[in-house]
Image (tube, rainbow, N blue to C red; front, side):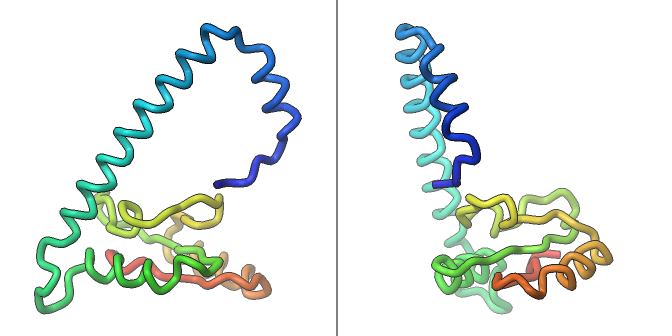
Length: 128
């Protein structure tokens, strides 16, 4: 779960929402949550296509890399991939603001240099 920067503001807003609206928002949240779970399930099934292909499929690379880093503090610097959704963006849990940085190569290098002092695992996009 992402950190909440202003919990007191969130609570103040929640207290101002009428009860009937809270019920509607909860129902909408459940509906969207179920749609998200179904989409995630479908994407994981799509990632299996070409699993044993040679050379290795990018979907397999993203899935196996995610298994290796999921408990680490990481950041991926993605470079343009022809407007094609990359597998890491489809399969990985991106819950922190720094998990995905959509930067061009020069900006990505500069950002990496600035972040050397941060104990974060930098990853380069494998789809570019």
